[in-house]
Image (tube, rainbow, N blue to C red; front, side, top):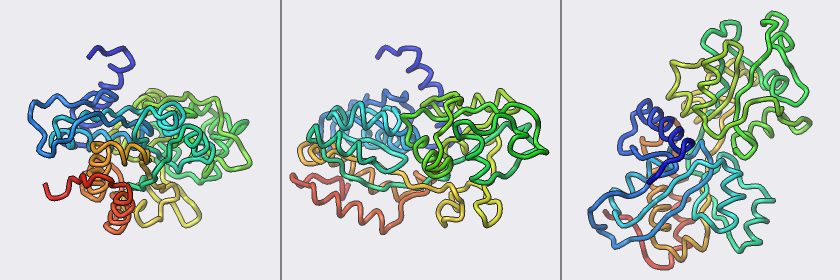
Amino acid sequence: MTQDPQRLSDSISRRKFIAATGVAGAGAVAGCTENTSGEESSEGLSGDVIVKGSSTVFPISDTFAESFMEEHSEVNVTVDSTGSGGGFENFFCPGESDINGASRPIKDSEVEQCGSNNVEPVEFQVAGDALTMAVNNNADWVDCVTPEEMSQIWRDGGAQNWSDVRDEWPDEEIVLYGPAETSGTYDWFNSNIVGEDYQHTARHQPTEDDETIVAGIQDNEYAMGYFGYAYYKSNSDDVKALQVDGGSGCTEPSLANAKDGSYPMARPLFIYASESSLKEKDQVYAFVEYFLENAETDTVQEIGYVPSSTDLRDENLSKLEEYNTSGTSTDGE
C-alpha cells in the first residue's frame, strides 16, 4: 500500500499513541488498518467493514479492528480518523461507510442528510471520556480553570492574552491549538463550554490529528489546546493537564472522575452503524457485536477511556439483536 505524506504522518502519530498506552495487537497504520493474516476464518465471515469518524473514538475502533481481524482473517476492517462531522457528512450519510465513530450525538441535520440517502443510523454509546484542556509544562501560573474562563479564551472575540483572563497571568498571547470544525470534540466543546451565546474562535490552529495539538502545546510556553483524555494519557509527560472548577472545586481529568460525573468535561462516546449494513452484511453485524461486547472490558480503560457498564453493554447488544437477520454472531468463540 502506497502512503502519501499525510498518511505517513498519521502512521507515526499512531505508533506513538500505541506505544504510550501499551495496548497490544494494534500495530497497523492509522487509516490503513487491514487484514494481512493468512489464517482462515473460523466463522466463514468475509468482506469489508468501513469505519470513519471521530479521532477520539479512533483508538478504540482501531484496536478492536485489529483483534477482530485476527479472529476473522477474511474480513478487512478499515478505520479512518475523519472527525465525527466529517465522517457523517462525507462518508456515512452518503452511504460510503458502515460505521461512524462520534464524540457527540448525531445532529438533526446529519440525520436528515442520512435520510435523504436512505441511510438509517443506529446509535450505540460505547464509552466515556474526560475531555482534557492542556498547557505547556512550563506554564506554572495556571493549574485550574473554570468553564467561564475557558469560554473567554476560546470564544470568537474573546481573550487574546493570558492577562485578559486573570490579571496575575502573563501579558502574553494565548496560542491556541484544537480540533477542526469537522470534529465532534469541537462541537461538544463549542456547545458545552464556549456556550450557546458565542461562537468558537477561528484563530486557533485546527487539526484532526490530536498529536499535532500536543506538539503545538509542547513547542510554545503560552500555548493551550484540548483533546480526548486518551491522548493526554499517552502524552502526560509532554504537556500539563488543567483541572476544571465547575463550581465544586478544582477536579482533574481522570477516568474515575469522568465515570462518577465529578469532572465537568466528562462526555459520552458513540458509534453509529448503518441499519442496512447491519442487516445485509454479516461481517458488519459481527464486528459491531464484537465492538459492543469488548467496550465493557479493560482494553478500553487501557486506551484511556471509561468502559461501558455491564448494563449498557447488555442494552446495546439487545438493540443490536433487532437487526440480526442472519443469525450471525461472534458469541461462543
